[in-house]
Image (cartoon, rainbow, N blue to C red; front, side, top):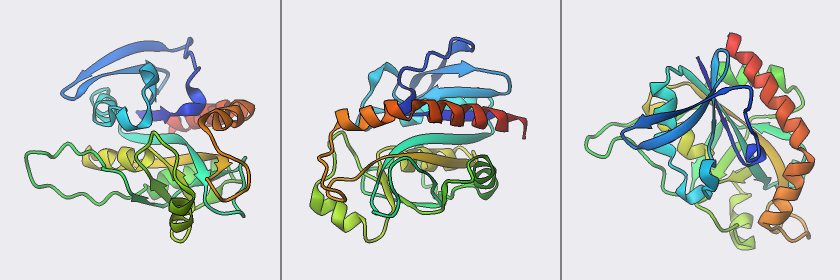
Length: 225
């Protein structure tokens, strides 16, 4: 059973063709949309900002629903001039400057959070124009990063976001293979002269929403694998 996590680009997604269920977990309650062979979870449900997303509840809900692999769609800012907005990227590693949640608060258990190569290969076939590989750096949010922070991040990462590292780590703790495909919705602060704001990011997301919905349809198609 495939689990799909959607982000800001799907905030207005109704999921009217799917059955909506609430899954209660030891970490809280998360809402899922059940489709044919997959579950869709919207990470910003209840309009939660990135720093208060209940990541543990979300990943536990997918695990309890019977999901055995997860693909995440995320919105990112580009840290490189040669990776412009409008592209997709399939990251193969991450760095986190934010505190990453864990389900192991009362025992010692180490996981190696690795993007699953098989799922990444499926995404590459689905979106051949995507940048295949690159490092995702996670910040805490909800604020955007300063120009100096972005300048430092650009030395060792390709895109910046606020969610994927947390999701991959928890998926690894739940033994769920995980991959992500990220939309590049803007240049990060200072990479270009244009001023970046949440409103400007949302405007770009809305322009590219049809592409994201087509991408979602393609990922749903991967549920047959």
